[in-house]
Image (cartoon, one colour):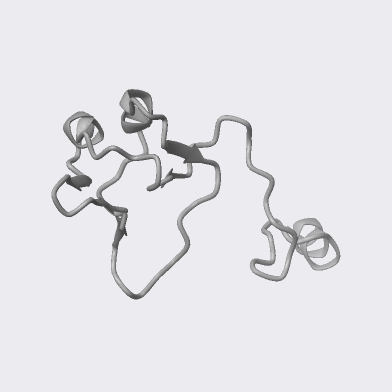
Length: 108
């Protein structure tokens, strides 16, 4: 036990010093968050229909696309079925927020 205590005192920490340490390098196939290019969206609603948790809401009349980040399980089905390929899977995770859990995108 003494050896482990001394090793812990003089060795490197086992965890990263977030947010002061270096940013983490994500793996190639990391599924972090869904991003949309709203200018390319045709509001067809296929992503909404394919979403197994119902996290995506598409309103064609208002040209509004909305995602509930806490309901999204980042499965990638919406990205696969998008006919215009305006949805993308980004390796970075959604940052913490206090304003709510839904992101709304509108096209003018």
